[in-house]
Length: 214
Image (tube, rainbow, N blue to C red; front, side, top):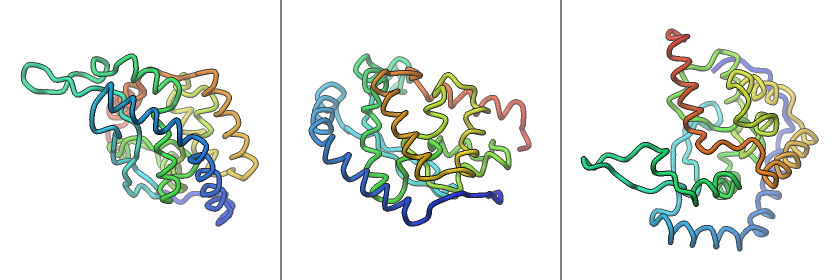
């Protein structure tokens, strides 16, 4: 892990996460129940999508999300491409960010923060520059600076640089500002791609092609 300049507000950050995430869970509990039942009825079990993602200092943790794809397979029993398994209902969950609500439990467990660099896939870890590795010097977030500044329309290099800038400049006021901007963007459904994994795959392929020894 690269040596990073981490700006932070210590125990107050964790207390803020616990209080706000706890209050949000109470407020959205009826929505959680409705979405849980809708996913169970329309997509089947399991209701939750569980995936290993890099957390603080790259340590893996299990990310919780509502599933948005079916288990449709081809004639050989192999899962169909993501785009073919993503239903209109799944697109709705993603465009409204309702699929992200279970991540509040990750926050309460101390695996994530409300605000921080979004946790990408673990296989991308070898392809970050030394500076970009600093994005893992804080807890990953449900939302972050990159998500309120263009979200999936912003090139990956710029998003990763915003992640590092956040690590170096984070504060209570900045986190509150990002949370308020996130709420506005979610309500307006701004900057939401139908399949973010496609963009992440592009990052991995691009880095493997241009910086094979990184």
